[in-house]
Image 1 (tube, rainbow, N blue to C red):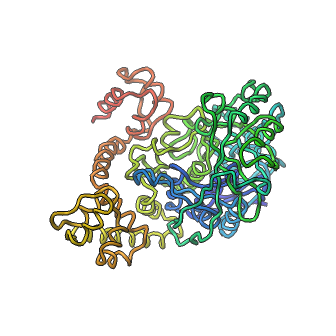
Image 2: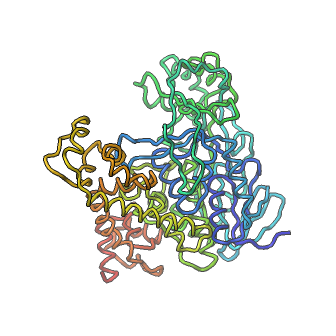
Image 3: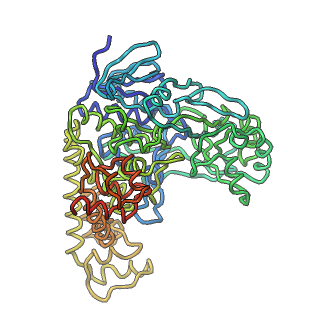
Length: 621
């Protein structure tokens, strides 16, 4: 019935979809197995992509040939660039998505790929022979062979839904949990844990009083996530903001004795940075109110997502409390919020390629690794898909360093440090965030994946070359072109900037706070004429390079120092047990994790700088 596949991907969430297309675009024959074909790429929680640090990840996925950015551009209902008041290293794109169109567009793109087949059924186990994964076993006993397997099970592994005192087996509202895989992996020697996440109620937008809420519109000139020619957003839906109150908090407290989070029924740890409303009230007892973002689910529905009101309290308590929120006085609920517990496997059991250490040709991606968020899942899926193909074709793994991408930071953190709570990406986790900005992801990453031979990247590479050349031309123009006091002083004085006493180069004016290329193009006709032939994104990136030249240079120096450790490969047979000068903890961690490079070893929790010095000596350095 089935021929042998190159890659089987188990699960069709954000990680699974990206894993499938990545391997397929590398020319692997892929089987995508899902329990329900109608929920491929479903946005299980908030209908949005991107955000702080997450937006950078979506841009990086796109630059590496993934589809998340393309799908988002085709289906978003609002776009905002966050943190514009801060430096460009902090700018983060975020899109409000049409939930139904997002999933539909993903499915269309997957089904259009000649290298992807589909199978709808639960996978209950793996085929493992002599320490190598060679396929999967389905719930009806089918054995499907493959050269590699990627597990992207999301919240489905022994998933348990909590609403007040009620417990329902399931991986998502209305969908059953996946069983069998955890138990087999434990028998094979893996360690597992439990994590928890949650989602807020969905309500009927027709019953809300929007006049009592703050309007939050999208950017007037919305951008795109993808570096390809995806459609520009010309019409946007508004979001709104409202707030809880002391009265709302008191109502919610009425259900605390029945909260699974407080009475011990939930054992898994939830996301620290996205707590439930009851957790917020408990942890921040001094706060009189909490902000709620009232977000539309799409163009063709009145369903509303109440961002900030995630809850596992009894449904009647959720309903009663929401009715006391401004604008919600006549609210009707579609369904209550709930918490979900699920199995995960500590990611320190993975190689940096996301292949498991215990079983070869088996890869984990997404929430199975302890992460939270569509974007974090998508990038892991993409990297696992690429590396599964490279593994079966006997090529070296594709690894991104921390200085290459946020994706590199995420995977390095997971594999070397692990996580005991759902891991979420933040800009603060990245040491080199001026270098790895959202605007230059294509320049950083597209050449790397193009060199691997991924299909459909030729046109992207042509665009990258055009962008790099355009930026050089813009930077040269700004460095050599002078501006006189009479040309610029009236405008400088109007913005409170010191006037010129003599002619200076445009680059010098651009370095001032509050001065941008678009301003100079408007004030000085010659500049406007020169800049008119360049894309807005090219101008923005060139401006950042010019304005932050000194900071970029310092970060490049830091990267060069760190890369010296990254190039020192530790052979697989290296015997840490014989090195008595290592601390006992370092010896134990190094033997367990077998780092590939000295740089990777330096980031393992419990390995000190003095331990790295000892290793350098024993490596003849």
